[in-house]
Length: 381
Image (cartoon, rainbow, N blue to C red):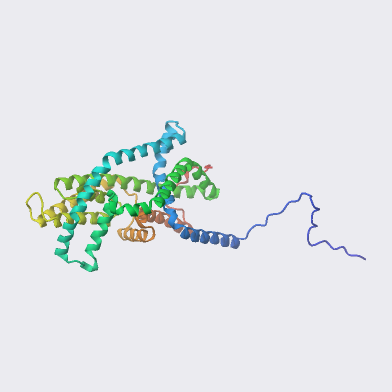
């Protein structure tokens, strides 16, 4: 009696003959290992190229801000997207040329006058608090400020530094411009691609989560731009009426510092009061203490008007964060990403709060608080 032995493996196909290969599914453990490995590789890669990331990151932010008007013109006026983006670049370039022709010389003169007053302010400050209050070298601080302002006005002393960094700056600007252009052009396609990456079963929830985060960012950015314009204009008018030296740079600083919640407005007011108090003279014949108090009252009234009239109408409840969390977010953003981190720290913290609340609801097996499935299209591509 003979026994037949079945081959344990299928016979190899003949050379040249067609054959199929069965895909072997990955286990859950293997999937997690691959996912974690990819994330770690991405983090290491980004850390190593972080010096060239800033143009791309600024381009993403610029494209995010400019995409709504581009979409509006493209859809409602039926103008090809390429022409809309090209027209936007032409308008921005025209504004830059006009500003450099008419506005920049005036602004440069204002900053120059302010720089010329810095030695007098420095001497007054040293006479009041000494050369190194709390370990801060006032002379070095003022010199640094003067050098930075001189760089804005094209002072010859900064020409060598400007020439040395010209190539790097040009490359970064070109990267920013080209990246913004392509992001504006391909924005809808990028969005559809990202949506397709989400499994269909989770798509309604993730789309609703993204919509809430997008609403937070949109309200915050729009509100901050409006606040910058209002506070810069209002503080400039007030400083001009009170004849405070350097009204233009102080007003611009007030608007920029407005982008930093809590600490920004306080810093702006303290800066203006210090300039008024340390100037030594004023056109009204008041004592310098009285002059400084008047400037402080002006900033206090502006701040109160902003808090109770402007902010509720402009920002609303876009960012629902405790002040302590805001301060921690600002400090963390500044340490990690510098100026850019300071600008996006608050909306990033608000987004993390939304995501954390969503993940908590999923972990405890309860419906997300914001979920409105009926408001989300489930047939998105």
